[in-house]
Length: 163
Image (tube, rainbow, N blue to C red; front, side, top):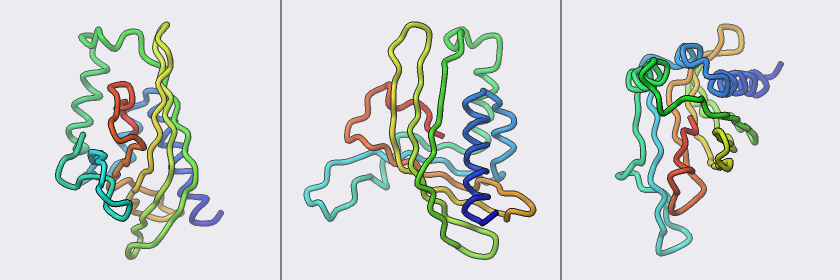
């Protein structure tokens, strides 16, 4: 199995843990210093300018804040999350480049579909930039993830977690 195939398998398993609400399994795939960020899309004056603000994130999380969020959702008091929504992550176009010894930048495209009860499904597309640590023999940990949403003005439904 090539490095790119091994990383692809990691990303597929990571997505499956989220889709199946196995939050403790997903958190175990994160490095202790994990950083998650969704920068605010902006409308630049020129097509050559950056399309995302580095100063205004829509979301900024750590492993600890995500653990707290998932613990809350799993509690009996999370009545707004009952019944649980259906969630599917589709990961494609995986590109890998080395950052250093046992550290990799992984770019991919994602489509996330979410539905709940009789509500219409919500779709969100994004590009992700991940930093993975490890190797195919020992396994990988997700050290950082930046999600670039594919809309200039995201709706509430498009802000579904695309972790």
